[in-house]
Length: 345
Image (cartoon, rainbow, N blue to C red; front, side):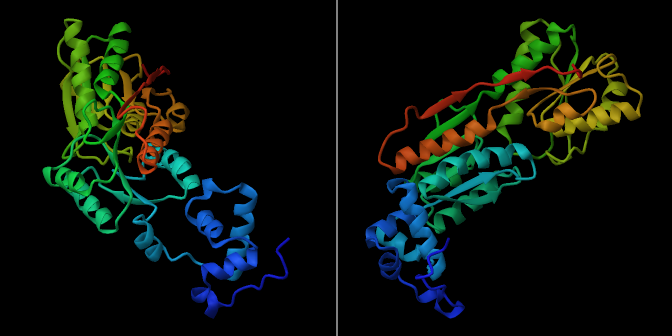
C-alpha cells in the first residue's frame, strides 16, 4: 500500500521536486536516493523499491543533464542495428538490455538500414549525446566512423561478427565457419551443386562471409563454386523468395539453395509450393538465422542458429566491465552456432 503520509505530486509540482525532498520523505540519505536512481545495484532491492515508490508519488524526475555534468556519465548506451523489424536484432537488443538496465543504463537505439554511411551518422549523433558506450553490428565501418570512435575513447563492442582484431571489443560467431558448416551439411546429404542468394547494395560483412564459407566447403570437396545471386529485397521482410523459380530455370543442375537470411528462405519455401517444386526432393533450401517461424513453415526450414540473445548479454557485460574500470575477460569473444536440421534440407 502507498504511504498516505507521502503526498501525491500535482502536475505543476513535478519539475520542482528535489532530491533532498525525496530523501527526507523516504527517510534515507541523499546519497542513497542518488544510488537508487543511477547505481541501483549498489543498494538493496527493498530500499530501492521504497525510494522509487516515494519518488514516484512525489513526482520526482532525475535531472539527467545535471547528473551527467557532475559524474561525466549519461548512463546511456547507443546501439546500432540494421533494423528492429527482424526479430533476431530485437533479441540481441533484449539481451543487452537485460544486462544494462539493472545496472542503471538505458539504450538509445538507431537503425543503420545496412548502410555504413548511416551507421556513421548514428555514431556521430550518439557521441553528440555523450553516450557512455556504443554497441555496433558487424565489423566493417567507414574510415570516418572509425576515426570518431577512436577519438571518443568510450568503450565500444562490435556484435554478431567474430572479429579477432576489434577496434575495441567484439562478440559474435564466425560467419565464414557458419557458411562452411551449412555447405558441408548439404554436401553430406548428396547435394553437390549449390546456389547462394544474397542482397544487393548492403554493407553487410556477415553476408559476404557466409558466401565465402560456402565456397570453402565446395572447394574442399572438389565441387563447383556456388552460383551466386543477389536480390533487391530488404532482409527480414520475406520478399524475394520468388527467385527460387528463376534459379532452377536458369541452372537446372542446382540441388540446394542457401539464403543469406531465413526470412527470404521461408518466402522461397512458400513460392516453391506455389510452383509445385518439391522441397527437398527437387531442391533443398537452407539459410542463416532462426526464429520460431522457421519451424512453423512446412517443410520446416533447415538453418544456422546463432546465440543472438547471448551475444547481446555478453556485449552488455563487456561494456559494463569497462565502465566499472575493469577489463573484460577477453576483448574478442567467439560464440558458436548450431545447424538446426529440419525438413527443407
